[in-house]
Each structure stands twice: as structure tokens, then as C-alpha cells.
Length: 535
Ligand code: GLN
Image 1 (cartoon, helix red, strand yellow):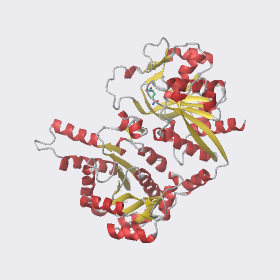
Image 2 (spheres, protein in one colour):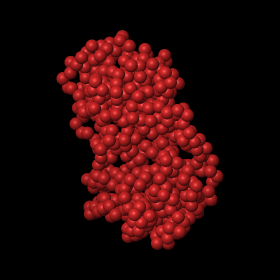
Image 3 (cartoon, helix red, strand yellow):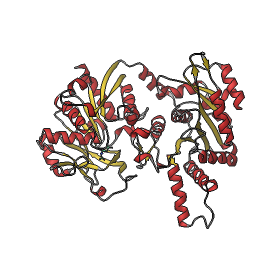
Image 4 (cartoon, protein in one colour):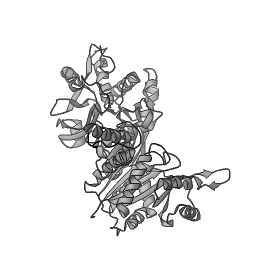
């Protein structure tokens, strides 16, 4: 296509309607018609990135290949499009202001008064177009928050200006809620009308309306909404609650959302050719032949969004095996030696989650001891691997006080140490070891069997590492380091070959699992758990 087209997705009425899934679904459908698509998220908060946010605030922090700590919606974008995102795909208000203030300090504004309009809005537009200039046919930009928020006003103003400047190369999609009032058995469109009014006040006329709803909305109500909001009837689409998020692109396609979008841009739609593997995934997902339960041991169990990518990776991997993976979130703070069996005995696999800090550590170690001694398939991720190392040191090597320097600075056996280049870092934001790093896998290992390759690249987010001073002790006692960073010697994978399936990794495989490319580690783990379940 000659010029990149921009699709802006805004939301109204309430937050949490699934703008990220709608943006991803539109992206998927356009991609399936052969267009080059990327999705970007603009977040209205002042943090430079979500890396410093507690998961309770914002769910999981997703990490891109280039080491950006980003909003979890980028995980959806990658899982749907099977296309890597980068720092450019997630911009916050904090980053925009920082860039502008840095320019001001450099003197770039030549003595002018620096203002929200035009300087902040120009910087927003620059960041949207920066990604557009990379050769995409479509850039879908999701505006975080809800229209009417004070915080998102500069974003709305920037996209209004883009439409003004670029005309038919920009399109607005607005997602709202149509609630169903039980007492009167009525669907209410007023909140949508108000939300669109608010958008119009910002100078934006939506081209497409997507109505999130619990139940099917009758055609006459859709027509009414369209009439009130100046939107063609065919461009009023409903997003009825689905069994899974992976049904949403299919539901949007059924209502011809992609064709309507292309028509509005004046583009003759290319043929839809790329939905086959998606549909076959969904079919398998809905027709499992077996079910297994896997325990996810972590400390954010009240908030499954904290483990979003792990939960999705299980869905992808399970579907390949036509197996429903039911994930039991187990609070590590509640696990004790007395109750560990009762809490985990129904599970055919145990995953110990990533995390930070002391809270819940002992429970994780106890869960790992159980998995190791009872031959239950085990996958440790990041802190989960570090805990596996500590457990082995304490209970096999007999280093009773072994610990990570993160949990106990004065431990006699620092089997997990701070990385050398982390020692003098004081700033918290964006300073961990982040993003893709190579790992070389030993040939005669389970990891090699799983990856089928000696050289892999996986994404990271940590400050601490396996202490190589103890490596020989571990290997002699049966825990092998089978994956090593070829440049630094840092241990990336450990395994216990005498155990049916015990693999722990310093990196985060979950960030790389997508619908059409489920992650091999998760597939292998699910297979091991299925085998264990049969026995
Ligand atoms: N807290 C550990 C570290 O920084 C593990 C981090 C994680 O699990 N992502 O090394």
C-alpha cells in the first residue's frame, strides 16, 4: 500500500472493556488479508514505563525482545499477530513529557514557550508516525484509559490533529458498553451516546462503534445507536462476551468489521487467506480430549493478570495436545510442609512463577521440594528457577542456609548472587537485565530435546543470577546447567536428568508463546504433565 493507514482505538463508559483484544482482533483480520500490521499502545500515566509498577496496579509487566518493559496488552498484540513488538509499540505520557523536557533543556525549542499544544501533541504524533514509517500498511494505536479522563486529553487532541492533517488515512474505532438492566429486562444505549458525545467534544467522530455486551443486541437498537452517534449501521458492531478472547477475531469477521474498515479507507479488500491456523487452534481449544490440572505457585493469586502470559502460554500449548490445562493458582504464602501435599497432590505439574522479594519464598521452595521428591513435572521460571537452585542447595547439597542475595544479603551460601553489572545500579526503572539474550544449549539435554536447537534467544527480566562458584557442586549432585549464555557464562537453564521432568529457566519463555507458535517449553511441560496424569 502506498501510504500507511492509522486506526485509533478508544474506549468509553468504563475501563476494562477489552480495547486490547479488539485492537488485536482488527490487527489479526487485516493481517489475515495479507496486510502488514502493527499495534501500538499509548498509556496515559506518568510512569516512563510500567516496569516499576507493582503487579497489583497493572497486572503483568510484558517484556519485548529489545528489552522494553511494557503494558500487558503488548502480549496480546504478539500472541494474536505472531509479530514482535518493541519499545516503540508502548509509549506513556511520562515518556512523552520526558522527551519534550529533554528537548527543552537542550534548547531545541529556540526560546519558545513549551506547551501541551503543540509540543506535547507533536511529540505524541511523532511517536505514532515513527512506527508508521517502518513500512506497515496499518498501524493500530490503542489509547489507554477512557474518554473523559483528564489524562488522555492530549492523546485525543493529537489523534484529532492527525485526522485533520491526514484525512482518510486515519480512522477512529470507539468501544463502549451496552449494559443490560435485569429488573427492566432492557439494554441501555445511553452510556454509549454520552461516551460518543464526549469524544465529539474532543473533536473526534468515531467511524466504527463496537458495543461490548453480555447478550446479543437486536438490530433496531444498533440502528438507533448509529443514528444518535452519526455512525453507519454497518459500522455498528457488537462484541458479545465470548468463551475465550480467541473467539473475538472470528466474531468480528462474522460482522465484516475488517471489510467495513477497508471500505472506509477506500481500499479494495484483499482475499482473506490467513485465518485457517487460527480457526483450527480455536477448534482444538473448544474440543479437548483430556483435562489436566497444573499448579501455578506464586504470590499474586488474587490477580491472575499478574501471570497473563503464562496462563495464555498454557492455553496455546494445551490446544496443541487437545488437552484442557486447568491452572490452579496456589498462594505460595500459604504453602507449608504440612499442607503441601494436600495443596498440590491433584496437580500433574507444578510451575513456580517469576517474582521479586522475600514474601512467599519459603512456600515456593517447599512446593519445589515436593515436585522434586515426588517426581511431579516441574517448570521454574526466573525466580522459580532461582528457588529451585536454593531448594537443591539446601536439601540435596546440605547447605541449609543457602539463599539468594535478594532475600538474605548475609547468607553463607549465596547460590543466587547479584549480577556483577547490577551491583552499582541504584535507579529502579529500566535497569534490570532486560530483553533477548542468546543461550547455548548442551546437546545431550532435555532442553535440547525440547528446542531442537543448540542456539536460542529468550527474553529476560532479572537482577540476580546462578552463582557459578557453586556450579560444580550442583552438577556433581545431579542438577545440571544445560543452557548457558555464550558471552557471559550466565546459567540460563538447569535440569535434573534423574527426575522425569524438572526444568527451570532464568528467562521468560511465556513472552514468546503465540497462537500460531506455542512455546516448545510449555508444550513439553504439558506433555509431561499429561503423561504423569495417566500414571
Ligand atoms: N527477583 C529475581 C531477580 O531479579 C527474579 C526476577 C523475576 O522472576 N522476573 O533476579
